Length: 288
Image 1 (cartoon, rainbow, N blue to C red):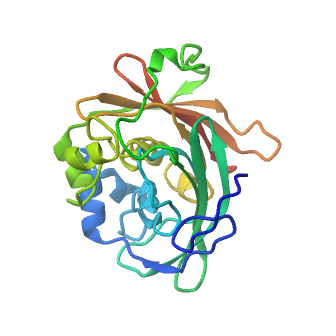
Image 2: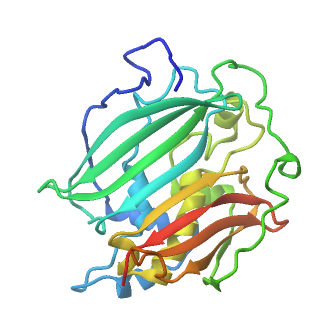
């Protein structure tokens, strides 16, 4: 854990952020499907009582780095995400988000802020929890972010497709227009080149919220209610996705309820056309 001088407007270990209201509007869901260019009709079949399920990864919209970051956000990147699902999130209903900073630690030349967020409904029933690892280059605030080539990263060459039952993959060629729709027309380094250049990147950085949603879509379609009620996800972002990249979310059922608690483990990853892995991790589903 890194010891940093505390600034009330910046992240520090133990900091509790003000609780905030979160609501998933129909526009949020519409932008999700249109931005990703995935078919949303299946979610009508996944739901119950004639009400479609909300895509599981919309939960990440509840996160906010306000007060959980640093004034110097040059070159900041998402490193890892953990999500625990307890129940589907409703639309058009006010939910409460409670967040705190669990840790600040160093990884290579980056400082990582680990923020935990809980999402509760009006009856204070816990619907989901997230642990977000965001990285910062605190020793740099100008110039260009030095990015290692995928071929030079340790472990990438060793990646092999895990053995097991393959899930139906989800593929997409992401363009800048899709990014703009997915992020609701907001101008930031995930949608605007100038904003990206101000943070040290040469091109728009496709948002991790967008790429992880393809993995979520794959799991939603494959496992339905079982995923929404007790599923867990833990992934790392290993390489940046740029506009124009064609990516594919993939998964393999590594074990089908053979563990002591009966849960199913699914290895998940995302890769570009050239085989570069951009996300890798595991999903866990509760016993049938």
